[in-house]
Length: 84
Image 1: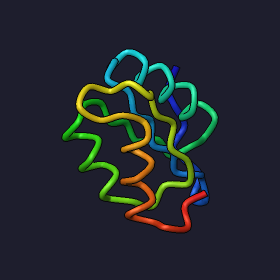
Image 2 (image 1 turned 90 degrees about the horizontal axis):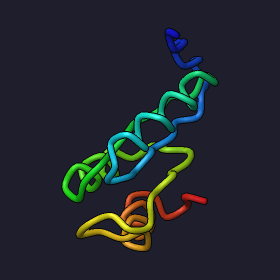
Image 3 (image 1 turned 45 degrees about the vertical axis):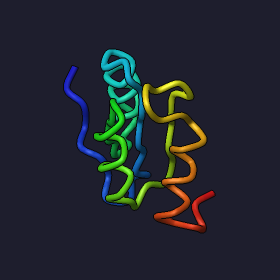
């Protein structure tokens, strides 16, 4: 199945998990529904992707080696204090 391109106003979703297979599955499901999805797995990749900002939603594993879910939230909030 070919994933459709995100619509121009599609929500931008960041999926964070240290298990690449989980990132891929979530990403495929969300892309199939027209969302613009980025993936991050691992400590450094996660920090770099979060720093890019501009996300409407972040879906994160709580137990990522060297970074936990609360640290992810702090990083997201540091980039965008109004992030819901």
